[in-house]
Image (cartoon, rainbow, N blue to C red; front, side, top):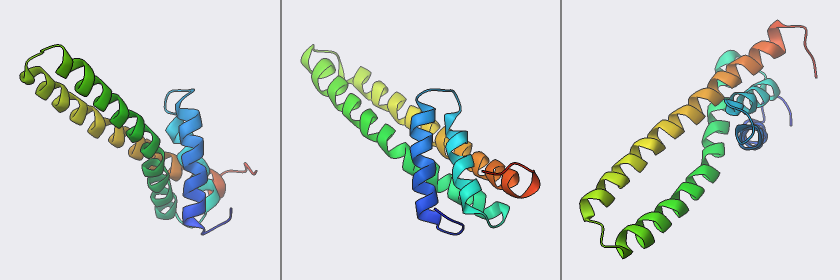
Length: 127
């Protein structure tokens, strides 16, 4: 938990992303800010560790989405004789939703990493 320990700071930021993201909107920004604040260095290092934290925080969401897609498309759509076109459109919708979700998580965490680095070096706030 120190300056320059990128993966440790990213994991801590990802934990904050998952917890805060499940409670408040744009909670992933808080996780990125924690990672960027702990990382130190320049702004690019803060953005990089924030983006890594966002990618790590996306993994639990991806597992839940994978489970739900398998349950919904495997059991419900296949079992009730719904035409395959609807399940194909549903899969397309899920794919588009996953792209937007990863974009939201990674970009918001990267912005948070930049903000955390800014708070560390350009303000008088200290932890």
